[in-house]
Length: 392
Ligand code: TMP
Image (cartoon, rainbow, N blue to C red; front, top):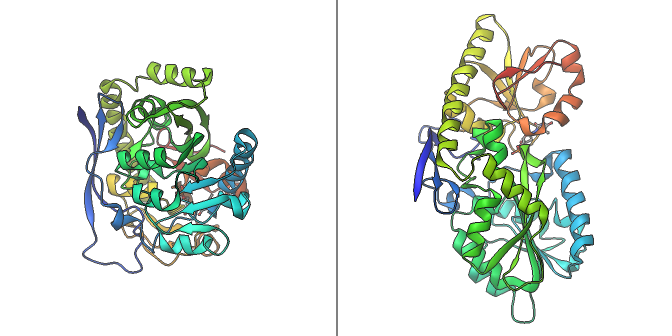
């Protein structure tokens, strides 16, 4: 049974950076539920993906050095571990993962046409949503995938039944599906409620993935915790009859998830209390800084910060602007709260007193890069795991 535990209020699409401020912006109600039967945590009423994954899609996975390096390392590791002959990626974005494979052995699936266009010259790319009809078009009795990889994508697809049935049709008998998504344990532990937004329909745990895959003739046999995006889990899934045995590290992850209460509704009610406190604390801190005439900006126009700004009801009253390195976000306005986005070259200078870490998941990379800002007395603010000014 699905039980609602968190209401993040009226939210715009996290990806809808506006070229100009418009009046009829799309909003939906963002609430989050826990399914007591399969432990799945999901957005209660997901938005139609056709509204979200358009030819205007802004996110470029290659934008951060951390992610470029992480995907390269993962690709090399998976090649060595599974020696796949045919690899497919679901949600290939700008090709940051597939470019580590030879062109003959990889297939890309990417519904955002602007992104699919980036990879189609070099790799076989299907500019489509992943579903059974696409699976039947790509694969047949004699052509199956040895490895299906999907990072930060499966959690975005509301129809998990169709997704996993299509995977089951496409995998070779010992083929492996590897998915990587933000981990529920990390979200709860670090109070990162901004991992919930329209695109993150699900925040998975090994507990929930273990239960769901069972329903579609698939089996979770291994999992590993990785640092990406503030704490993610990489899940290894095979067909029921495949050769792989359940690993000890999976059993340990599941045991730790149970210890953290990810199978109990009360855990999520307590989380909601902490989220409400985070909202209060952030408003209080920004208010105090603004009263003493400090210049505050936000660093990284992330999808996550859309949730924070709209839930906490904070905008240009506090932030002069947001800086972001992504070219197609610059010159636009943040969804819902309409804060202007400019390049760091233009806006990240000595006039800034405080920078809210919208891209807190790249904290290490950013703090390393912005030594000069810190040396000159600039400070970063974060809300993860609780609202604070970061001490340098
Ligand atoms: P993500 O958390 O959805 O991957 O988005 C991170 C955003 O932050 C992306 O738009 C790029 C931006 N960013 C910067 O502006 N400067 C940086 O140093 C880093 C690491 C990211």
